[in-house]
Length: 303
Image 1 (tube, rainbow, N blue to C red):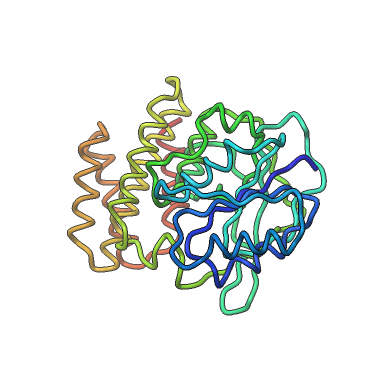
Image 2: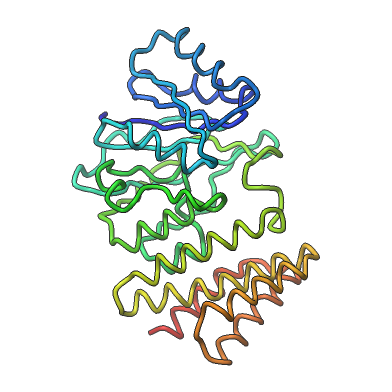
C-alpha cells in the first residue's frame, strides 16, 4: 500500500516504542521530533538503526506544536497517501482497500481506559455542521490523499489544541471525496494523564478558543448557501456548549470570555442567543448529549 505514516514526537521516550513496534514494515514511517528534552529524538534514531528498516526516517522540527511537526512530515512525504499517528497509541492496521479516487478515508477507532477497550462512539459524517458538533473526525480516523491535503493547506500551525477538529472541519468545507469504512475499528488509543490537550476544558481554554476562531474563518470562506448557514450556526451553539463546560468546571471568567467571543463574532438574533444560553445552562448542570440537541436545532432552524 502506497502509504506513509507520520508520527510527531514530543517527550515520549517512555511511550513511543510501543507505537513504533506496532507498525508493520510494509509502511513508510516519518518520525518528527518536536523539540523533545527527554531524549526522545535519540531514542527514535536508535530504534530506526536497530530495526534496520530502510523506509524509516527521523527528523526534527523546532517550531512549536504538533501541527508544525506534522507539516514537516507532510512536506517530506513521497507516497500517494498519508496518515498521521500519535506517539502514545498502538497501530493495528488500516483498511486493506479503498476507492483510489478518494480524497479522504475515515474509520472508527478503539479507546482503552484502565485497560478496557471499547469502540469510540462514532457516526460517519460528511457535513461541516455535524462534525463541528460531534467531532467525529480526529487525527487517527483520517487518511488523506497527500496531494489533496497539501492543496487545502495541511495542518494549521496556529492551532495548538483541537487541531484535528479544525482540520476535519476545513477538509469538509472543501467537499472531499470521502469514504467511511465501518466494518471494524482500528488502533488502540490510550487515555492517560499525559495528553497534550489537557485534563480539563479550563486548561488551555484560550488556545481552544483560538481554534474556534480559526474554524470560524474556515467557514466564512465557504460559498454562500445552506451548508454555510448550518456550519456557522453549529459553531455558534458549540461555543455556548463550550462556555457551559467551563461553567461546570467552575471557571466563570473563562466562560464569560467565550460569551464575549460569541457576541463579537456572530451576528444572530436575540432568540438564537437564548437557544445558546439554554444549551450552556444544560451543559453546566451536567446534562449529557448537548451536541445531539444542538444538531437537531441547527437542522430545524437552518432549513
